[in-house]
Image 1 (cartoon, helix red, strand yellow):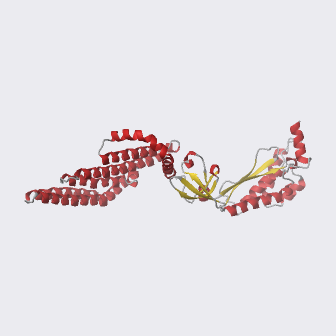
Image 2 (cartoon, rainbow, N blue to C red; image 1 turned 90 degrees about the horizontal axis):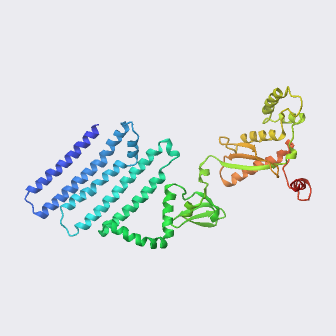
Image 3 (cartoon, rainbow, N blue to C red; image 1 turned 60 degrees about the horizontal axis):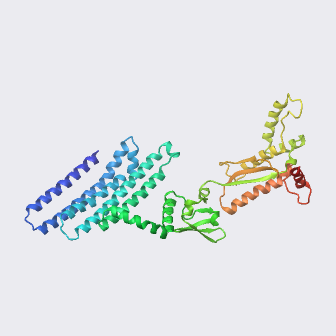
Length: 425
Protein backbone atom coordinates (compact mmCIF):
# COMPACT_ATOMS: atom_id res chain seq x y z
CA UNK A 1 0.00 0.00 0.00
CA UNK A 2 2.86 2.34 0.81
CA UNK A 3 4.45 1.62 -2.57
CA UNK A 4 1.14 2.42 -4.33
CA UNK A 5 0.82 5.79 -2.57
CA UNK A 6 4.46 6.56 -3.30
CA UNK A 7 4.00 5.71 -6.97
CA UNK A 8 0.94 7.97 -7.25
CA UNK A 9 2.79 10.85 -5.61
CA UNK A 10 5.81 10.46 -7.94
CA UNK A 11 3.61 10.39 -11.05
CA UNK A 12 1.63 13.43 -9.85
CA UNK A 13 4.85 15.32 -9.12
CA UNK A 14 6.23 14.47 -12.57
CA UNK A 15 3.15 15.84 -14.35
CA UNK A 16 3.03 19.00 -12.23
CA UNK A 17 6.76 19.50 -12.82
CA UNK A 18 6.20 19.36 -16.57
CA UNK A 19 3.43 21.97 -16.36
CA UNK A 20 5.52 24.30 -14.18
CA UNK A 21 8.57 24.05 -16.43
CA UNK A 22 6.56 24.74 -19.59
CA UNK A 23 4.96 27.78 -17.91
CA UNK A 24 8.42 29.07 -17.03
CA UNK A 25 9.47 28.69 -20.65
CA UNK A 26 6.49 30.74 -21.83
CA UNK A 27 7.36 33.70 -19.59
CA UNK A 28 11.14 33.57 -19.96
CA UNK A 29 11.27 35.65 -23.11
CA UNK A 30 13.08 33.06 -25.23
CA UNK A 31 12.82 33.03 -29.01
CA UNK A 32 10.49 30.57 -30.72
CA UNK A 33 13.24 28.07 -31.70
CA UNK A 34 14.75 28.27 -28.24
CA UNK A 35 11.34 27.77 -26.63
CA UNK A 36 10.69 24.73 -28.85
CA UNK A 37 14.08 23.21 -27.98
CA UNK A 38 13.52 23.70 -24.27
CA UNK A 39 10.03 22.17 -24.48
CA UNK A 40 11.44 19.14 -26.29
CA UNK A 41 14.15 18.67 -23.66
CA UNK A 42 11.62 19.05 -20.85
CA UNK A 43 9.18 16.62 -22.48
CA UNK A 44 11.86 13.99 -23.07
CA UNK A 45 13.16 14.37 -19.51
CA UNK A 46 9.71 14.11 -17.93
CA UNK A 47 8.73 11.19 -20.21
CA UNK A 48 11.96 9.40 -19.34
CA UNK A 49 11.37 9.99 -15.65
CA UNK A 50 7.77 8.87 -15.94
CA UNK A 51 8.83 5.73 -17.87
CA UNK A 52 11.48 4.93 -15.27
CA UNK A 53 8.98 5.33 -12.44
CA UNK A 54 6.46 3.03 -14.11
CA UNK A 55 9.05 0.39 -15.01
CA UNK A 56 10.76 0.55 -11.62
CA UNK A 57 7.84 0.82 -9.21
CA UNK A 58 4.76 -0.35 -11.07
CA UNK A 59 5.94 -3.97 -11.20
CA UNK A 60 6.65 -3.96 -7.46
CA UNK A 61 3.24 -2.49 -6.63
CA UNK A 62 1.34 -4.76 -9.00
CA UNK A 63 3.16 -7.86 -7.77
CA UNK A 64 2.04 -7.14 -4.21
CA UNK A 65 -1.51 -6.30 -5.30
CA UNK A 66 -2.04 -9.42 -7.41
CA UNK A 67 -0.49 -11.56 -4.68
CA UNK A 68 -3.17 -10.45 -2.22
CA UNK A 69 -6.18 -11.00 -4.48
CA UNK A 70 -8.09 -14.29 -4.56
CA UNK A 71 -8.35 -14.30 -8.34
CA UNK A 72 -5.74 -16.06 -10.45
CA UNK A 73 -6.29 -14.17 -13.70
CA UNK A 74 -4.35 -11.13 -12.48
CA UNK A 75 -1.42 -13.38 -11.51
CA UNK A 76 -1.40 -14.84 -15.02
CA UNK A 77 -1.51 -11.36 -16.59
CA UNK A 78 1.45 -10.33 -14.44
CA UNK A 79 3.43 -13.49 -15.35
CA UNK A 80 2.84 -12.89 -19.06
CA UNK A 81 4.23 -9.35 -18.72
CA UNK A 82 0.98 -7.64 -19.72
CA UNK A 83 1.38 -4.75 -17.25
CA UNK A 84 5.08 -4.37 -18.03
CA UNK A 85 4.34 -4.12 -21.76
CA UNK A 86 1.74 -1.42 -21.10
CA UNK A 87 4.53 0.82 -19.82
CA UNK A 88 6.15 0.62 -23.26
CA UNK A 89 3.36 2.90 -24.53
CA UNK A 90 4.94 5.88 -22.73
CA UNK A 91 7.91 6.52 -25.12
CA UNK A 92 5.84 6.70 -28.35
CA UNK A 93 3.22 8.88 -26.66
CA UNK A 94 6.02 11.16 -25.47
CA UNK A 95 7.35 11.21 -29.04
CA UNK A 96 3.95 12.48 -30.24
CA UNK A 97 4.16 15.34 -27.73
CA UNK A 98 7.71 16.19 -28.80
CA UNK A 99 6.81 16.19 -32.50
CA UNK A 100 3.85 18.49 -31.81
CA UNK A 101 6.38 21.21 -30.88
CA UNK A 102 8.30 20.84 -34.15
CA UNK A 103 7.66 22.30 -37.56
CA UNK A 104 10.17 20.31 -39.60
CA UNK A 105 9.71 19.23 -43.18
CA UNK A 106 10.30 15.61 -42.15
CA UNK A 107 7.75 15.80 -39.35
CA UNK A 108 5.31 13.70 -41.36
CA UNK A 109 7.89 10.95 -41.86
CA UNK A 110 8.76 10.94 -38.17
CA UNK A 111 5.09 10.75 -37.21
CA UNK A 112 4.64 7.73 -39.47
CA UNK A 113 7.62 6.03 -37.81
CA UNK A 114 6.12 6.71 -34.39
CA UNK A 115 2.83 5.27 -35.64
CA UNK A 116 4.65 2.07 -36.62
CA UNK A 117 6.37 2.00 -33.24
CA UNK A 118 3.00 2.30 -31.49
CA UNK A 119 1.38 -0.40 -33.64
CA UNK A 120 4.16 -2.89 -32.82
CA UNK A 121 3.88 -2.18 -29.09
CA UNK A 122 0.11 -2.65 -29.19
CA UNK A 123 0.67 -5.98 -30.99
CA UNK A 124 2.93 -7.21 -28.18
CA UNK A 125 0.39 -6.09 -25.58
CA UNK A 126 -2.41 -7.97 -27.35
CA UNK A 127 -0.18 -11.07 -27.66
CA UNK A 128 0.51 -10.97 -23.92
CA UNK A 129 -3.23 -10.72 -23.30
CA UNK A 130 -3.94 -13.69 -25.60
CA UNK A 131 -1.26 -15.78 -23.88
CA UNK A 132 -2.82 -14.95 -20.53
CA UNK A 133 -6.27 -15.94 -21.79
CA UNK A 134 -4.88 -19.27 -22.98
CA UNK A 135 -3.14 -19.90 -19.65
CA UNK A 136 -6.29 -19.07 -17.69
CA UNK A 137 -8.38 -21.35 -19.91
CA UNK A 138 -5.89 -24.22 -19.51
CA UNK A 139 -6.42 -24.08 -15.74
CA UNK A 140 -9.97 -25.38 -16.24
CA UNK A 141 -10.69 -29.13 -16.76
CA UNK A 142 -12.61 -28.47 -20.00
CA UNK A 143 -9.35 -27.41 -21.68
CA UNK A 144 -8.19 -31.06 -21.83
CA UNK A 145 -11.02 -31.97 -24.19
CA UNK A 146 -11.46 -28.62 -25.92
CA UNK A 147 -8.14 -26.76 -26.15
CA UNK A 148 -8.11 -23.28 -27.65
CA UNK A 149 -4.38 -23.11 -28.41
CA UNK A 150 -5.07 -23.54 -32.13
CA UNK A 151 -7.54 -20.62 -32.13
CA UNK A 152 -5.11 -18.42 -30.20
CA UNK A 153 -2.43 -19.19 -32.77
CA UNK A 154 -4.87 -18.48 -35.59
CA UNK A 155 -5.73 -15.09 -34.06
CA UNK A 156 -2.01 -14.32 -33.74
CA UNK A 157 -1.41 -15.14 -37.40
CA UNK A 158 -4.33 -12.90 -38.35
CA UNK A 159 -2.96 -10.08 -36.17
CA UNK A 160 0.50 -10.51 -37.72
CA UNK A 161 -1.07 -10.09 -41.16
CA UNK A 162 -3.08 -7.04 -40.09
CA UNK A 163 -0.03 -5.40 -38.51
CA UNK A 164 2.16 -6.03 -41.56
CA UNK A 165 -0.50 -4.51 -43.85
CA UNK A 166 -0.93 -1.57 -41.47
CA UNK A 167 2.81 -0.90 -41.28
CA UNK A 168 3.19 -1.01 -45.05
CA UNK A 169 0.21 1.30 -45.51
CA UNK A 170 1.73 3.76 -43.00
CA UNK A 171 5.07 3.71 -44.80
CA UNK A 172 3.55 4.37 -48.23
CA UNK A 173 0.99 6.79 -46.70
CA UNK A 174 -1.94 4.97 -48.29
CA UNK A 175 -5.15 3.52 -46.91
CA UNK A 176 -4.97 -0.19 -46.04
CA UNK A 177 -7.91 -0.78 -48.38
CA UNK A 178 -5.83 0.22 -51.41
CA UNK A 179 -3.01 -2.02 -50.26
CA UNK A 180 -5.31 -5.03 -49.79
CA UNK A 181 -6.78 -4.57 -53.28
CA UNK A 182 -3.29 -4.45 -54.77
CA UNK A 183 -2.12 -7.46 -52.81
CA UNK A 184 -5.13 -9.57 -53.81
CA UNK A 185 -4.17 -9.19 -57.46
CA UNK A 186 -0.56 -10.09 -56.71
CA UNK A 187 -1.35 -12.89 -54.24
CA UNK A 188 -1.78 -15.63 -56.86
CA UNK A 189 1.65 -14.92 -58.35
CA UNK A 190 3.26 -14.85 -54.91
CA UNK A 191 1.69 -18.19 -53.96
CA UNK A 192 3.06 -19.85 -57.08
CA UNK A 193 6.55 -18.42 -56.77
CA UNK A 194 6.98 -18.71 -53.02
CA UNK A 195 4.82 -21.78 -52.39
CA UNK A 196 7.55 -23.81 -50.66
CA UNK A 197 8.76 -20.81 -48.70
CA UNK A 198 5.27 -19.98 -47.43
CA UNK A 199 4.53 -23.60 -46.54
CA UNK A 200 7.90 -23.92 -44.83
CA UNK A 201 7.44 -20.69 -42.92
CA UNK A 202 3.98 -21.66 -41.64
CA UNK A 203 5.18 -25.18 -40.82
CA UNK A 204 8.18 -23.79 -38.96
CA UNK A 205 5.91 -21.63 -36.82
CA UNK A 206 3.69 -24.64 -36.06
CA UNK A 207 6.63 -26.92 -35.27
CA UNK A 208 8.11 -24.35 -32.91
CA UNK A 209 4.88 -23.21 -31.27
CA UNK A 210 3.66 -26.77 -30.65
CA UNK A 211 7.13 -28.05 -29.67
CA UNK A 212 6.79 -30.91 -32.14
CA UNK A 213 10.48 -31.16 -32.96
CA UNK A 214 13.79 -29.75 -31.78
CA UNK A 215 17.40 -30.06 -32.87
CA UNK A 216 18.81 -33.19 -31.26
CA UNK A 217 15.50 -35.10 -31.26
CA UNK A 218 15.38 -38.64 -32.57
CA UNK A 219 12.65 -38.83 -35.22
CA UNK A 220 11.50 -41.54 -37.60
CA UNK A 221 9.67 -40.87 -40.86
CA UNK A 222 9.62 -43.98 -43.05
CA UNK A 223 8.11 -42.13 -46.00
CA UNK A 224 11.33 -40.12 -46.38
CA UNK A 225 13.68 -42.91 -45.21
CA UNK A 226 14.58 -40.84 -42.15
CA UNK A 227 15.43 -42.45 -38.83
CA UNK A 228 17.95 -40.59 -36.72
CA UNK A 229 18.89 -37.32 -35.03
CA UNK A 230 17.69 -33.90 -36.21
CA UNK A 231 20.68 -31.79 -37.24
CA UNK A 232 19.08 -28.66 -38.67
CA UNK A 233 15.66 -27.03 -39.04
CA UNK A 234 15.37 -24.31 -41.66
CA UNK A 235 12.72 -22.70 -43.83
CA UNK A 236 12.71 -25.39 -46.51
CA UNK A 237 14.02 -28.64 -45.03
CA UNK A 238 14.81 -30.54 -41.87
CA UNK A 239 18.10 -32.44 -41.96
CA UNK A 240 18.23 -35.80 -40.18
CA UNK A 241 21.38 -37.86 -39.66
CA UNK A 242 20.32 -41.49 -39.88
CA UNK A 243 21.86 -44.24 -37.78
CA UNK A 244 23.81 -45.48 -40.81
CA UNK A 245 25.38 -41.96 -40.88
CA UNK A 246 23.56 -40.96 -44.07
CA UNK A 247 21.73 -37.62 -44.23
CA UNK A 248 18.02 -37.40 -45.07
CA UNK A 249 16.30 -34.12 -45.89
CA UNK A 250 12.59 -33.72 -45.21
CA UNK A 251 10.53 -30.78 -46.51
CA UNK A 252 9.54 -28.79 -43.42
CA UNK A 253 5.86 -28.68 -44.30
CA UNK A 254 5.71 -32.51 -44.51
CA UNK A 255 6.40 -32.75 -40.79
CA UNK A 256 3.08 -30.95 -40.28
CA UNK A 257 1.02 -32.48 -43.10
CA UNK A 258 2.29 -36.08 -42.66
CA UNK A 259 2.84 -38.22 -39.59
CA UNK A 260 6.21 -39.00 -38.04
CA UNK A 261 7.46 -40.50 -34.79
CA UNK A 262 9.45 -38.45 -32.30
CA UNK A 263 11.33 -40.79 -29.97
CA UNK A 264 12.43 -37.98 -27.67
CA UNK A 265 9.58 -38.77 -25.29
CA UNK A 266 11.08 -42.21 -24.81
CA UNK A 267 14.50 -40.72 -24.15
CA UNK A 268 13.04 -38.41 -21.53
CA UNK A 269 11.05 -41.19 -19.85
CA UNK A 270 12.24 -43.71 -17.26
CA UNK A 271 12.42 -46.70 -19.58
CA UNK A 272 12.33 -48.05 -23.12
CA UNK A 273 9.62 -50.49 -24.05
CA UNK A 274 10.25 -54.16 -24.81
CA UNK A 275 7.33 -55.84 -26.57
CA UNK A 276 8.25 -59.12 -28.22
CA UNK A 277 6.58 -62.54 -28.41
CA UNK A 278 7.65 -66.16 -28.60
CA UNK A 279 5.26 -68.67 -30.24
CA UNK A 280 4.63 -71.81 -28.17
CA UNK A 281 3.73 -75.12 -29.80
CA UNK A 282 0.23 -75.74 -28.45
CA UNK A 283 0.82 -79.53 -28.52
CA UNK A 284 3.29 -79.05 -25.67
CA UNK A 285 0.72 -77.46 -23.32
CA UNK A 286 -0.49 -79.83 -20.56
CA UNK A 287 -1.57 -80.11 -16.92
CA UNK A 288 1.24 -80.38 -14.40
CA UNK A 289 2.01 -83.79 -12.97
CA UNK A 290 2.86 -84.37 -9.29
CA UNK A 291 6.51 -84.75 -10.22
CA UNK A 292 6.51 -81.42 -12.08
CA UNK A 293 4.75 -79.68 -9.19
CA UNK A 294 7.39 -80.98 -6.81
CA UNK A 295 10.11 -79.81 -9.19
CA UNK A 296 8.72 -76.29 -9.56
CA UNK A 297 8.10 -75.93 -5.84
CA UNK A 298 11.87 -75.95 -5.35
CA UNK A 299 12.12 -72.64 -7.28
CA UNK A 300 12.13 -69.55 -5.08
CA UNK A 301 10.20 -67.74 -7.80
CA UNK A 302 7.40 -70.32 -7.83
CA UNK A 303 7.24 -71.93 -4.35
CA UNK A 304 4.94 -69.39 -2.68
CA UNK A 305 2.69 -69.12 -5.74
CA UNK A 306 2.31 -72.88 -6.14
CA UNK A 307 1.57 -73.37 -2.42
CA UNK A 308 -1.15 -70.71 -2.62
CA UNK A 309 -2.63 -72.17 -5.79
CA UNK A 310 -2.63 -75.75 -4.43
CA UNK A 311 -4.58 -74.61 -1.35
CA UNK A 312 -6.98 -72.62 -3.51
CA UNK A 313 -7.50 -75.41 -6.05
CA UNK A 314 -7.88 -78.00 -3.27
CA UNK A 315 -10.89 -76.08 -1.93
CA UNK A 316 -12.33 -75.64 -5.42
CA UNK A 317 -11.87 -79.26 -6.48
CA UNK A 318 -12.90 -81.07 -3.26
CA UNK A 319 -16.46 -81.72 -4.49
CA UNK A 320 -15.54 -82.39 -8.13
CA UNK A 321 -16.10 -85.97 -9.31
CA UNK A 322 -14.20 -85.92 -12.60
CA UNK A 323 -11.00 -84.44 -13.93
CA UNK A 324 -13.03 -82.54 -16.52
CA UNK A 325 -14.60 -80.43 -13.78
CA UNK A 326 -11.41 -79.81 -11.84
CA UNK A 327 -9.14 -76.82 -12.11
CA UNK A 328 -5.47 -77.69 -12.42
CA UNK A 329 -2.15 -76.02 -12.86
CA UNK A 330 -0.76 -75.93 -16.42
CA UNK A 331 2.82 -75.73 -17.54
CA UNK A 332 2.14 -72.64 -19.68
CA UNK A 333 0.40 -70.85 -16.77
CA UNK A 334 3.30 -71.62 -14.43
CA UNK A 335 5.72 -70.43 -17.12
CA UNK A 336 3.90 -67.08 -17.42
CA UNK A 337 4.02 -66.54 -13.66
CA UNK A 338 7.68 -67.60 -13.56
CA UNK A 339 8.68 -65.13 -16.30
CA UNK A 340 6.76 -62.31 -14.60
CA UNK A 341 8.60 -62.99 -11.32
CA UNK A 342 11.90 -63.34 -13.21
CA UNK A 343 11.37 -59.91 -14.84
CA UNK A 344 10.64 -58.30 -11.46
CA UNK A 345 13.93 -59.68 -10.15
CA UNK A 346 15.87 -58.51 -13.22
CA UNK A 347 17.85 -55.32 -12.36
CA UNK A 348 17.81 -54.29 -16.05
CA UNK A 349 14.00 -53.91 -15.99
CA UNK A 350 12.23 -50.83 -14.61
CA UNK A 351 9.61 -52.53 -12.42
CA UNK A 352 7.99 -49.16 -11.62
CA UNK A 353 6.61 -49.12 -15.17
CA UNK A 354 4.11 -51.54 -16.70
CA UNK A 355 5.42 -55.09 -16.97
CA UNK A 356 3.56 -58.31 -17.71
CA UNK A 357 3.70 -61.65 -19.51
CA UNK A 358 0.52 -62.29 -21.45
CA UNK A 359 -1.05 -64.60 -24.02
CA UNK A 360 -2.06 -63.29 -27.41
CA UNK A 361 -4.58 -64.71 -29.84
CA UNK A 362 -3.54 -68.27 -30.85
CA UNK A 363 -3.09 -68.86 -34.57
CA UNK A 364 -1.62 -71.24 -37.13
CA UNK A 365 1.85 -70.50 -35.77
CA UNK A 366 1.08 -71.47 -32.19
CA UNK A 367 0.34 -69.64 -28.94
CA UNK A 368 2.13 -66.24 -28.73
CA UNK A 369 3.47 -65.43 -25.25
CA UNK A 370 4.33 -61.74 -25.17
CA UNK A 371 6.89 -60.08 -22.90
CA UNK A 372 5.82 -56.50 -22.20
CA UNK A 373 8.11 -54.41 -20.01
CA UNK A 374 10.49 -51.43 -20.00
CA UNK A 375 14.26 -51.61 -19.84
CA UNK A 376 15.94 -49.33 -17.32
CA UNK A 377 18.72 -48.54 -19.81
CA UNK A 378 17.46 -46.65 -22.88
CA UNK A 379 20.72 -46.57 -24.86
CA UNK A 380 20.21 -48.51 -28.08
CA UNK A 381 23.01 -51.08 -27.79
CA UNK A 382 22.31 -51.78 -24.12
CA UNK A 383 18.59 -51.98 -24.82
CA UNK A 384 19.09 -54.60 -27.54
CA UNK A 385 21.38 -56.60 -25.23
CA UNK A 386 18.80 -56.57 -22.42
CA UNK A 387 16.08 -57.68 -24.81
CA UNK A 388 18.24 -60.46 -26.23
CA UNK A 389 19.19 -61.69 -22.72
CA UNK A 390 15.52 -62.04 -21.81
CA UNK A 391 14.71 -64.16 -24.84
CA UNK A 392 17.94 -66.15 -24.54
CA UNK A 393 16.72 -67.18 -21.10
CA UNK A 394 13.21 -67.94 -22.39
CA UNK A 395 14.50 -70.22 -25.14
CA UNK A 396 16.74 -72.07 -22.71
CA UNK A 397 14.18 -72.44 -19.91
CA UNK A 398 11.14 -73.49 -21.97
CA UNK A 399 12.10 -77.22 -22.01
CA UNK A 400 12.18 -77.16 -18.18
CA UNK A 401 8.44 -76.45 -18.32
CA UNK A 402 7.78 -79.08 -20.96
CA UNK A 403 7.12 -76.40 -23.55
CA UNK A 404 8.57 -76.07 -27.03
CA UNK A 405 8.75 -73.26 -29.55
CA UNK A 406 6.60 -73.60 -32.65
CA UNK A 407 8.68 -74.12 -35.78
CA UNK A 408 7.68 -74.74 -39.36
CA UNK A 409 8.78 -78.08 -40.73
CA UNK A 410 9.91 -77.52 -44.30
CA UNK A 411 10.68 -81.25 -44.91
CA UNK A 412 7.10 -82.02 -45.82
CA UNK A 413 5.98 -83.45 -42.49
CA UNK A 414 5.44 -82.35 -38.90
CA UNK A 415 3.58 -79.20 -38.02
CA UNK A 416 3.40 -77.74 -41.51
CA UNK A 417 2.04 -80.92 -43.10
CA UNK A 418 -0.60 -81.23 -40.38
CA UNK A 419 -1.61 -77.59 -40.68
CA UNK A 420 -1.79 -77.75 -44.48
CA UNK A 421 -3.96 -80.87 -44.36
CA UNK A 422 -6.40 -79.05 -42.02
CA UNK A 423 -6.46 -76.02 -44.29
CA UNK A 424 -7.17 -78.29 -47.30
CA UNK A 425 -10.06 -79.92 -45.53
